[in-house]
Image 1 (spheres, rainbow, N blue to C red):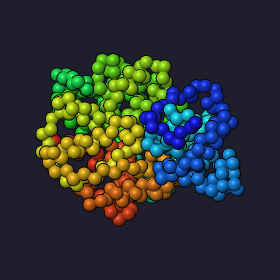
Image 2: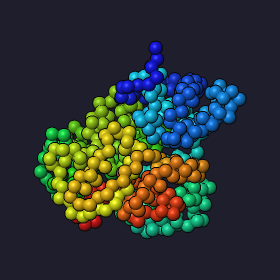
Image 3: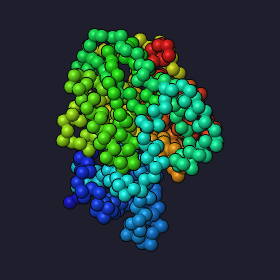
Image 4: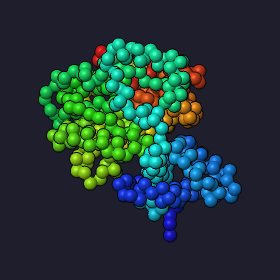
Length: 449
C-alpha cells in the first residue's frame, strides 16, 4: 500500500546523464507525464515558482481537466519556467525518494533541458549569458570597464541587449569590476594553522566568476574576516566557472569541462586538509550536490564535496569549536536578511542568521529573516520573457524585506540582493542600503573597508 507522503528525509539518486536513454525525448516525455500527473493531484508546490502554475493552468484549461487533456508539446512551457532552485524537491514534495513514487521534478526538468540543448533549441543569446567566465574577461581593464559600464546604463544599449541577447531593458545587470578579486587579493598574514574539532584551520578560496569579475568587495571582506580570526588562507591557484549557469541551460557537456578543470585544481587542496570556501551559494551548491550527482564514481569530486563550505557554515562551526573571535564593536541596527534558495537546499540550516544572532549578543542587531524565493534565479530574472515573472514571484519578498524600514537589506546571493533592492524600489519602499552579509560581518567587527 502506497503511503500519502514521506516521513524520511529526501534522498537523491545519481544523475544517469551519460546513459543514451537520458536523452531519449519520448522516454523523457513519458516520465514528465507521470510526474506532472502526480503534481496535478497534489498542487502543494503552486507558490514556489512559475513552473507549477503553468502546469496547473494547462491542466485546468484542457479539454478533460486532467493531464490527458494537455498537449504534450505544451510540457516544454513548464520546463522553460524551471530554474532548478531545488526547493520543490527538498522542502515541499512528499513523494521524493525514498517514497515509492520516486518523484524528482528538478532533475526531470534538467533532463528535458539537456534534450532541448542537444537539439540546438537554445539560442546564442542564452548561451552567451550563461558564459560568465567569458563576458567577465573584460573586468579589471579600467578603460574598458568604464566604457562598458557607461554604455550598459543607456537605454539604447539596453534595447540592443534586449534584441541581441534577450536581456530585459528593466532588469538589473551587474557592472564589471575595475579590479579583479584574484588579481588584487592580498596574501594571508596568518601562518599558524589551528584545527578545530569541526573545522580545518586553513582555508582555500574559490573566488567564483561573480566575486572575481563583478563584486570583488565580497571576497575582500571574507579575507578580512579570516585574517581577523587568524585563519590562514590561499586563493586557489586557478579556476573555471563552477558550471551552474550551463547546468541551468542543460549544457551538461560544458558542465563536465568546467568540472574537469576545477576538480583537478581543488582536489589537492581538499586532500591537504583545507576548507574550501565559496561566497556564492549557487557555486557552493554545484560542488556540494550537482557535480557529485553527475559524477558519483569520481573520488576527487567526493573529496572536493567533503571539503566545500558555505562561508557562514564554516564560521559558525568555527565558533562552535571555540575558535571564532566575538569582539564585535559596530551595531548594525535593523537588518532584513534574505535566505537564498541555493543556500536553503545545501541542508546546512540558517548559518548566516545564526551569525547575525551571535553578533546581536554584543551589539544591536534587530533581525528580520525572510525565507522565500526572490525570483531572480540566475539568468532567469534578466531574460526578456521572464523578468516580469521574476518580479511577480519576488513581490512577497520585497514586501517582507521592507518591514520596519531596515537600515540594511542583504542576501547571501548577491544577485538576489540586487533583485530585491530593485523590487523594493519599484514598490515605493526603497532600501536604505544593500550590503552582503560578509560585508556586514566585517562592519560588525569594526574592520575598515
